[in-house]
Length: 78
Length: 309
Ligand SMILES: Cc1ncc(C[n+]2csc(CCOP(=O)(O)OP(=O)(O)O)c2C)c(N)n1
Ligand code: SF4
Ligand code: SF4
Ligand code: SF4
Ligand SMILES: [Mg+2]
Image 1 (cartoon, rainbow over the protein chains, first blue to last red):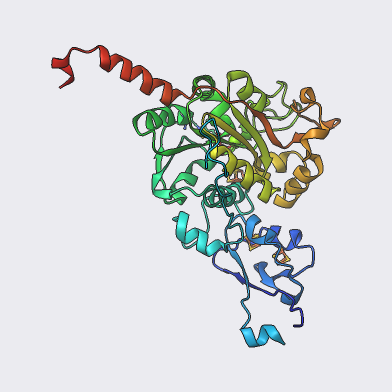
Image 2 (cartoon, rainbow over the protein chains, first blue to last red; image 1 turned 180 degrees about the horizontal axis):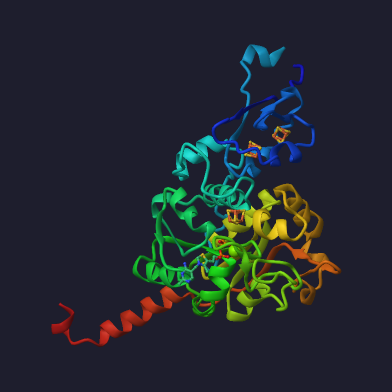
């Protein structure tokens, strides 16, 4: 069985985000970024996410949810 | 099979920790939050601390309907309303007094206070030291942001020596309390410190405090970049997160006991701040509600039968 890389799903609420910059600054693999003019957080490079959850734990406005993606069994076996 | 002293031969199974639950599921279980942002300023450490407290509820496995919190006035004071627990939003500094009453009346509840540094250590100092002395089974959480945030950033008993606030524009002339040292001196059985920049550690400290039988105290270093940070060269939330990261010591065993407490200095010429994180004190002693129940039983036994019925 080939080893599958764990992948994650990141959901950011634009209504909750208040552009404080904490999430994209703490994200070491630079998954997160911001979008002008309001500089709300966005996902830029999802594949690089390690699932460390720092962004989710530190977002002061609880705008980010990180979920492990559950792969279909057939997909997981390839 | 049981051992001669009546102890079961096998230890109870270790609780399985479920630490990876996504935020939205935790919110569903423990929180009651508005659709839009919180009442704190953008980037405020209070939202981070609140998140850690929610994960600590989950880690400690509490039934949120059996949790009651109490607090007074300050930026932090809305926090109690953001959980599904009951909350007393009372007068400034009286969190420990409300919590003492709650716990005595309903010992089966998990009781926490959510208090600011000004609230707990200035106007509420008296309630704090006596709750600690009694060793009543409550958990006191102090959000130390170095100032009175809600009223515009005046100095508090925690403000670092030399630092600028609304009421110390030339530098704070008074030395600060180390809240943890104060708690230990007053008799607290469990005393821990963490910062909002160490979310996993902070969650564990709060969960351990909740699980502790007796008075537990957690000092949460929580930035107020908007008032204290801006006046002291750290205007962004991330500046203060780095300040916590750079000045924290996570390995307690590397620090001799007498060096675990700190009177911070943060003036233009001198910066000397150290956060020693972890459980700084653990001491089992008789718990107040239990002692009080014994006293009550004794008093009841002495009553004439006519009065008892
Ligand atoms: C009896 C009383 N005195 C004074 C005040 C004014 N007051 C409101 S909040 C506050 C200080 C809050 O500081 P802190 O507890 O550190 O909380 P923060 O706002 O920093 O989170 C004061 C003095 C009050 N509400 N009640
Ligand atoms: S940490 Fe939260 S509020 Fe701050 S920029 Fe990121 S998503 Fe927005
Ligand atoms: S979970 Fe970690 S790696 Fe993934 S986006 Fe958040 S901070 Fe970055
Ligand atoms: S004034 Fe300071 S403590 Fe109060 S909400 Fe704003 S950043 Fe937070
Ligand atoms: Mg304060």
